[in-house]
Structure formats: structure tokens, C-alpha cells
Picture 1 (cartoon, rainbow, N blue to C red):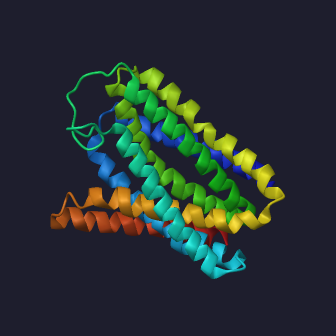
Picture 2 (cartoon, rainbow, N blue to C red):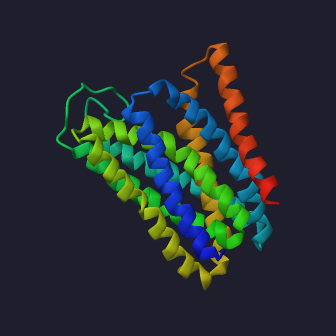
Amino acid sequence: MPVLAWIIVASVVGGVLSVVAAAAFAFNARTAHVPILISYAVGALLGAVFLDILPHAFGMADSIEQIAATILIGILLFFVLEKLVLWRHCHEDQCEAHEAQPAQHDHGRSGMMIMIGDTFHNFVDGILIAAAFLADVQLGLVTAIAIIAHEVPQEVGDFLVLLHSGFSKRYALALNVLSSLAMMVGGVLAYFALQTMQQWIPPLLALAAASMIYVAVADLIPGLHRRPEIRATVQQVALIATGIGTIWGVGVLLH
């Protein structure tokens, strides 16, 4: 199958699958399953980074030092971007990004902000998927799986915000499906742009690695520490290992 077809299929299926899976959890209010998704996502993200993305990026790059520097810059960039999002939500005496708010609608304001940010995020994910597929089909598949794994728990949160903002379940689902299509748009545009700029593929893979490392370490793992009891810790470690094992298994099967 042509690389462009792989990119389109991975972007559409990945985006829609993430939304549908997240809706199944959010609409049924099965929030107890969200920590399970998060633990698995951590393993899938880290497995994709260290077992596939970075080996390919280092192998394609002219300078390992430049790739390492790009990863470092990328982590700092995602830190700053997240700070900007938090500052946008924070006010003088309270911070909506961290504190629980009363169960009341906000006439769709926070919901629309979430959708704008999620659409941009999906667009960037599409670019990263395209860069991975242009480097290697196997790498593209592994990257798509890792992105889906961390998109599901994120989409669950997005659905809850939309419902809190007063959107109906049907409208929230429609908005998320439309937002997920930005992944395909980003992937297709990147495919044509990167065809003539092959030298950009290793740095983009490094940025993809930085994004996944930051999401796993800064956003997802701290939430797991809120359950320090032994049983929860063992479950989390097992699920992280399962996520890593999934990425390793996909790589073995594709070989």
C-alpha cells in the first residue's frame, strides 16, 4: 500500500477510533477505567519512543548531537506551551486548570477552547505520523498506535469538559469526530511537504519523541502517583509493561 494511503488510513482510523473509545468511557461515566487507560498509555508512549522512534531518528540523522538537542528543545517547548494553556485558564485567586469547579455550565466557553486546542493537537499528530511513515512503514504504525493510546484518556477528559460546558452527548461526539479529522489534514499536508524536504524527517521524529516523553512523564505519570498503595502501584507497573510490550510485539510482527 502506498505511503500516502497508510498515512490517511492511520490518521482517520486513529482519530476516529480514539474518539469512539473515549466516548464509550465518558458517556457511560466509567471513570474508574481512566487510570487503567493512562497507565497503558504511559507504556505505549515510552515504548514507541525508546524502541522505535529514537533508533530511527538517530539512524537517519547526520548528527546524533543535533537530534539529542532537538529532543531537549522539544521538551522545553512543550513545557512552555503547557504553561501558556495554564496561564490562559488561571485567574487571580483560583486556577480552573487545577481546582475542581462547581457542577455548572459555562455556556460552552471552556468546551470550545478545548476543541480549538484539540484540533491543533490532532493536526500536529498528523504531521508526526506522516514523518514516521515517510521514514519507515513499521515506524509509522508504531507511532500511530502510541498516539492512539494517549489520545483515548485525553479524549475522555475532553468529553467530560464538553458535557460540563452544556453540550449534548451527540453534539460533543460530532465535534470530537470533526476535530479528529485534523489529524488526516496534517498528515496529508506533511506528506507532500516532506517529500521534497527529507532532511526534516529526523528532527520531526525527535520532536515526536519529545512530545511523547513530555506527555508521559509530565502529564500522565504524576496522576498515577495519586494512588500510592501497593495494589495500585503493581497494577500500574503491569499496565505500563503491557503498553511497552504492545509496541515491542507490533515491531516483532511487522518484521
